[in-house]
Image (cartoon, rainbow, N blue to C red; front, top):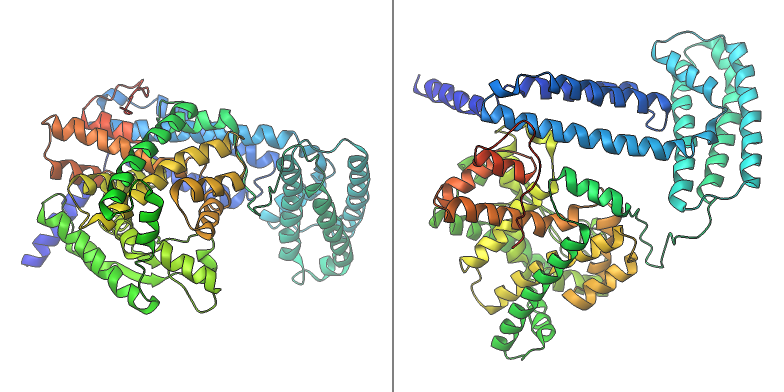
Length: 560
């Protein structure tokens, strides 16, 4: 009975951590968006763009009609997060639609194919003989269109050429899926459609391949680094910052990155002098890199570092860490292939340890070992596990779980980077080598602001970003290449790399307001922050200050 009572009260506590007035609306939206994405599964079509624009408009109208003033503070917070999210989705959806319009004429022969795959959703039996003739006609029209485009002026950028190719490929793929729905299940369809479909597939694949290379080389696609990203430009950077509630320009953030780097370099020189290398901090960095350990020793040391970080936080009563969170994390070794993109540790419930494997070249093995030496890694393990990403994910599954849709790197990486700031302030480094390790990563975060923004502004190429990390931060070249590849070719958003230090600064300044301002203890601040789930940090600040007007606008100037 006692256990049942405890379970009941635990349930009540969890209930208070998600049941706001907007819970059902947000959950319904998630279900709507998911269902529509499964049905309208050609993202390069008029049908898709129009249907999702209606989804965002309908939900924004529904929000407008809600009785905001009657909501609790948590309900108002959900309203603001949801509204901001919908406005961002709609803006970038409409931006993508405008780009689509510039190339959609490449499939102006495709209406019969769209009709075919749309009717397939309802399993409407086609007239196979008529459909075969239609496909034959579409192939001729596609070839004619191809010839017209060959004679036309090439696209002005490789991005536009790739979008045109993607539009053709999306049409082909959806048509092929519909074809396979009927093929072999419908004997008449199979007899009539096999050859026409083979011809259509062959033509559209070749057409798409042609379009992909049909551009003027006015903007370099590959600068020799082999890294192919897609700079988003100044306008979209500003919009991304706006929806993440960062009221600064790209240029102002670059200046902040340079300022943070200068602080790191000054501290690195102090550490270098203490180690006997004078002002040449790169020699001190080399000294620390060469403290690497044998490959087979490393996983056990990572576990020791994780336990050490947990003990450090708990002994100082900085944060409530549930026993289950401490129990459920685990270790995994990262493959050699993945280390080409992620040369350092990654984390969450499982920490992925980067260290050499037998298939690596000798040079790559040494770069991996030097780049993941104990002093560098000691500043990474707590970032990936506790109080970092593992604890984040653990809490997000248990508190306001409907807010997981509002994922923002400023919250995700801001919290973990903040702990690097906080632990530095609390003398977490045991010795000078540990300080160098922490400073290396802090310097790296500052450099990320600079190189990622300069890349997306079109000012730097990937190779310039690689050289910057090698020259200014002291990265091993292979590790620098992997970091830049991860930044621009991975699944990360354009602001992800700058979000570490900018988000960390937001959390740090918010802590100063709330803790140093006498409104909360440090533990209360940490416990509150980690249980609120994803959102722009300025909205969390407004909730903590109980200041959430319906017409809320971002204005928090947190850079000092």
